[in-house]
Length: 331
Length: 120
Image 1 (cartoon, chains in turn brown, green):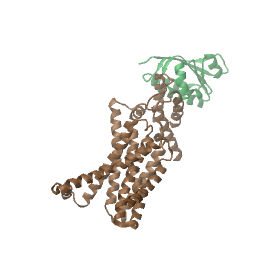
Image 2 (image 1 turned 45 degrees about the vertical axis):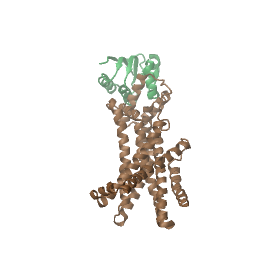
Image 3 (image 1 turned 90 degrees about the vertical axis):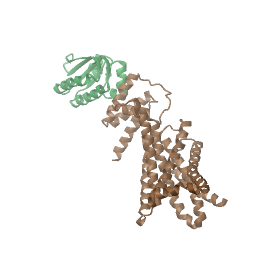
Image 4 (image 1 turned 135 degrees about the vertical axis):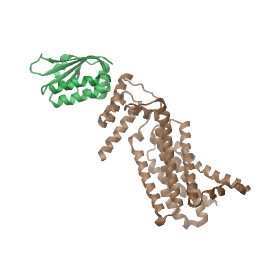
């Protein structure tokens, strides 16, 4: 038994190493942090195992309490499978989300860019996929032997692991946006939008909900598609295209200037401009941004950044206009 | 409503140059900039080609973002007619704003009227 676990651990580690090297090429945070988030991710399989353990413990001793059997009478056939896999997917995303959230609450200085958050999500997802792969590989190895393991190993290493890191990467991206809600609200305010004090909290909640909802929804669809069988393996093709599309989306988020901009959590440097004069400049920047004068906005922000290096709103305007200019170039 | 007073005159010191001087006093803000700007557009439309415009900002204590947008547009229209635009005697805070906005790279800012006349 032990050698099987050892082999499966090595097999599960391979895709984790390869995928992490694809997404985390730049080591801008220390390895220790990466390791702990990855480790935290591996622990997220515990709630699912916990469900199973508690269920077997309760039902094993009291078959009358088999609530799953009772539920199966109500939700039957494919609906049951869909419900079960959707539930598992949603639970996994919530647990992975909490890994990133707890890390950020304890060490807020670690996530200083949206992409820091995204990378932490990716690591948490990789940790989960690593642990889940060990369990799956051991079960398959025991049931079907080495030959039976080849195809699941290839599919899970490429698509399942990638899907997991993307799901958690997506929620972590939105978590990152929500973390810097004040700056993003101010960014809107300078473009002339009416902003109330409630908007700051609403913005935060909205983005956490979008991120978690997206990742849970995509995960539920992914699990459901894998759990059903359609003619000509249409469900498998769907999953493959889903993963490819999500991969490209995540790469786009990682490469965007806005994703990479560093937010200052505490103002170290005071602006060398008078507040009311800086407000005039920001008002102009907002106005021109709205008029899509991105080059002018970018140039002004560069100069303003020299005068007020810790102003996050200036950074957002600068990076958004940079992204818009780059997008215009590629069109 | 903030107060803005302005006067537009022709400078006849140097007959070889066509120069208009716009003297501003008060504050240019949201409440008055949209009613002030058409007067300048009117002046630009009616002036002869190669006419330069000197904005005397000595009495101007504040200008808002929209005003800067208008100044950028005045610059485009005046230079399109072959003229120049110069801002003279602006207060330090206004110069600071124009500097960060990058307006000083297009429009010369001068300390005195004499310098402005030489540049026109």
